[in-house]
Length: 491
Ligand code: ADP
Image 1 (cartoon, helix red, strand yellow):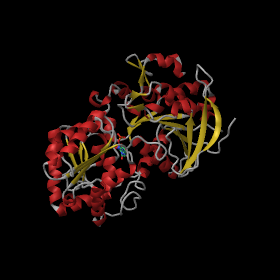
Image 2 (cartoon, rainbow, N blue to C red):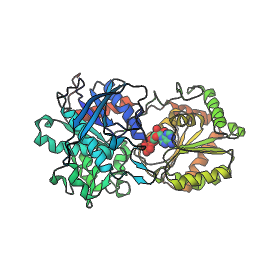
Image 3 (tube, protein in one colour):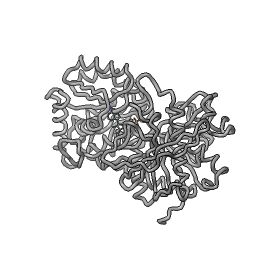
């Protein structure tokens, strides 16, 4: 038996964690939430896959168990467990090279990896088996998104078969309902769940095996990452087919707004920026803008013109098609636009064609660049976020902190984080529906205000003062953990 000195009260399961792995917002959340919980006095630990592309980020990672038994029904396969510590939080990496040592995390350009169901079922089972070797069971298993969603389901059945788990509760957090981990029913048997889990109140979804549904159906509490999104997903428009089971579980469904990690994202002390700046002095922001204009080979005249930016996945969810639709009209206004993203090939190609049409004023960077994302946030004047739905959204929070008022659709977390013009407290501009016409008119509104320097400055100052801290979010999670039975020893 392996003893760990950590014995967490809350064990978080996630398929991404910044700075070790990242494809999007989930990683940022999981880089910050465990640390905030730790600072709030909760003993937490994280389990996450040991990807081949893992960035150790200067942290010492060591092997702590070579052959952790996983007990898959069809073979006695084992996992390697590695450990590191991140700001005081123990992080366990679950390794098995045939599953995780790949170029990408979930998919290539030609589609999802064929064995994603097996890979992430393995991850969940190995995490639970690893925890099973601890002196005491965690009070809460907190699983995130479809990749970890079977944890509450397994736990539900383990509670009655293994006394070790009898008092452990589970929380399941949905970061994006559209990604569900939906697989053929033939894969259910190999998951190791008992046959009674195969029903409409369990993991079955229109004849398929749906991992996300397992999380929703079995967790003691279900959360999503903003209050507005937690209400939206009860409707067919936003529910992605899960509105039925979510409505049944409405009593345990909570919306807890994500925070932003201002130690990583903030213009006061950002290692990726040419200079820092604060809300009462914008000269640094102007320097950042000049530097980005040079970096991206944009025309010098743009220094005195508004610079608009988009950072994110080039997917329909993010409304990149709406931006593409209005780009010609925008460019004719003599302003600058910068796009950083990757995703759908068709959007990438269309954007590159547009760059040919607007050389010097439109810059498109296809790819993923953490440091460039920081520089774009700092350098631009207006941030564009025409999402069709947005569970929380982090980039608009970063944009606010960098003094770059967002123009965003009034959906999900964008409603909860942006105060829209013309409110006297406005920090940005929202528009009612994801339609090109409305998007353009909201941008026009922003451009008019940009021309009024005094009003623009005061909006920028208000935006920069917004504080969506992780401390606040962590407090709400702790309250939730307590409501389902966890006692905090430091109480
Ligand atoms: P989502 O998780 O839906 O993709 P969020 O706004 O919650 O959207 O978080 C996106 C995160 O991923 C942010 O940290 C953002 O800066 C980052 N990001 C997205 N695309 C890129 C990219 N192409 N290059 C660098 N960072 C990116």
